[in-house]
Amino acid sequence: MNLPDTILYEQRDHIAIITINRPDSMNALTVEMLGALDRAFEEVVENDDVWVAILTGAGEKAFSSGMDLKEAIPALTSGDQLGYTDPTKRQFSEVYKPIICAVNGFCIAGGMEMLEGTDLRIAAEHATFGLGEVRWGIIPTGGTHIRLPRQIPWAVAMELLLTGKQLDAKRAYDIGLINQIVPADKLMPVALELAKEICKNGPLAVRTAKEIAVRALGLEEGFALERKMGERVMQSEDAKEGPRAFLEKRPPKFTGK
Image (cartoon, rainbow, N blue to C red; front, top):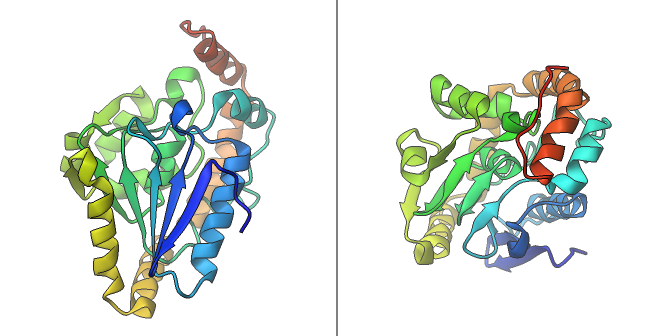
């Protein structure tokens, strides 16, 4: 498997550990990294010796801050879907082996959207969660509008989507977004212990249990709706102004157009 240095893949017994490895940039994702993540999870799906995956970020500051805006925004505002060729699918849509997310800091924007595609979530005490896209005139189009209201209370999901505010680890735990909070130095040991616990069970039974649960949600129609309606935002003048203001470190001047 050919992966760049920014995406690391390691297998320990029946556990695959996938690490977003760009800590100096808050583990922000490039288009190349998205493709590499897809290839890493294709290996998870296709390798019969892998029963559980752990997804984490390198360093102590961030799981992932989402897409690298300098690269992503010009692409998104021009209609490029950054690899999502099927409007009914999103990241990890067809990964039916369990994914444990080990959150070691900021989990925001596209990082938060990845988290929503995972099954079990362990967070360090200093982890924070949020979707700040509306503050910059854009919206998260990686499945959040469909997944998040099914995972946490409606009012909290709307607060995250409409205000751009962030949650600390305790609040995330209280609303059921994550399973457990641990000291930073215990994050990977606890994630690995959870993966080993799952590996004690029948792998076919575990995969089937997840597949039934995911398929029964019927997310595909919602994903397609998000794609279609998201285009009117991502191709707007506000969607160009917001990220430009972010990069220039100034308040955006929105016009609603």
